[in-house]
Image (cartoon, rainbow, N blue to C red):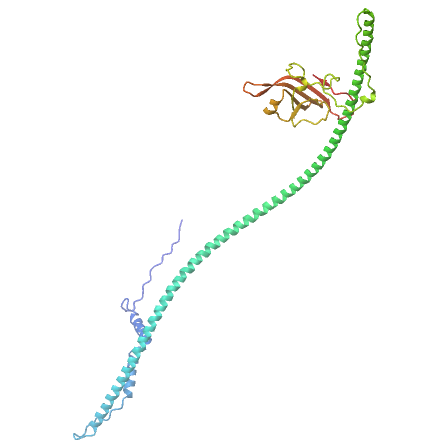
Length: 401
């Protein structure tokens, strides 16, 4: 296995014979000197100085001939002296002019230096202000960047909130539609319920009226039948007494004849009467309790607590007890029990066979040792009545004890 490798060899530098490091320094020095002299307004190099000197010399008056051929020559030397004096005077004038020009130049340079210093100071102040402005700009730029980032964050949050608001509005719209639908359905159900209640109330009132009429008719018929039987028994008893009286001795006085009751007419018995919940229909004014324990008071003077809960159905006068001196309450309390001697609780429920079952729980109100009242239950009755849901044979309600 081979590999090609290129090797770069160093190249020898050419030798020019110059001192190392001083090849172009003299030229650069002369150029820099000429540039600075040019900026100051002075001569740039030696050739310029020589030309300016030659120009000044040319401006001087020419010297006369200085050849002396005679020792008694009184013309050449005075002329030379005059020429030299003129040159000296001209030189002094030029020196004065140069001094004056130099003073003016110094004044101008001093003013220029002062103006330059003031301008430098102003520039320095402006640079300081500029730096301060730059710092303010940088701080403002940083604040702007921070606000831009915050604005972007807020825009992002606003977008999220807008999307969330849109979702909530859609949910609200759907819920409003569902609520309207449910309200419409509830309204329809309420209308149907009212109609059903009206129909049921009508049916209940019709059935109640029918049962009231039937009960009144049957009670009147039963009373008439019992009175007829009683009248027949009275007639038989009267005949038996007459037979017994005839067989007695003639010396004993006869007892006064018993008055036979007048048989009531059928029209008098058809009057409106209330049905009495009692085992015997011939005793409508008796109390609905069994005489297990009779106090010293009479039955008509006893006071009853008729406890009827609010959940009971209103059946009118059907299968309702007639209790004189009764205080009807929905929930008994100590004050009510303290005023009464007897207690009866009416409880209603619907049996599984569709009949209304009424339970009468009776008891006596007794006093306790602590001064309160207690109820001792003594009797229990159950009444049943069929619901008028279908046309059936009109039968009296079953009364079971």
